[in-house]
Image (cartoon, rainbow, N blue to C red; front, side, top):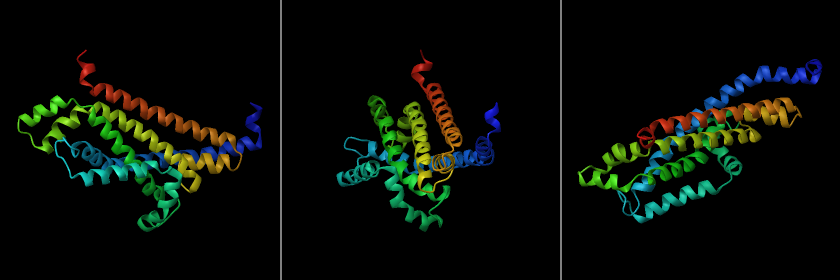
Length: 233
């Protein structure tokens, strides 16, 4: 245990004691807020991408669908760090700063909602089309079909997609530490990597890995519990 008396180790342990709890809280706060906002935009967009296509329950004009798909594809094709740098001036306008956790919410949501839209789109396409046709034959409106048929039928896949989206957003948040973001990413990069404090860096990385495992495990269990096919076996 002599290494615990090493001044450099003691310094790093003090940094972890003072910074890690707040960094963990900041990461969780940002993750939940960004995921909620990303789904506020991405969920309706994903529904439109399925229901608005030709043959969907509520077809939209072709140019509208092309515009929606183009927007999603363009935003998904831009590397996150570049997108974040480009969008930070918008953060200055909306939240009054370009630095810190609050500033990163805007670019994070812009980067995440196209992913959410595609995840939702993929989940909804798994729904048996016969169930939708049966609802249409019974005279259900487009809104009723979406709300009472498509979304409930796709619930397990939507939950799995939400878990994947959350872990992806968590990874984005860690990268945001490079250009002024807060949370565990800031601790790992600023305190650990830039200042050669390996203990701090790996402790923050380990915390991020544990969070990913926790959210992924919860998502998998919830998706399994909601899957009617598994319950009836």
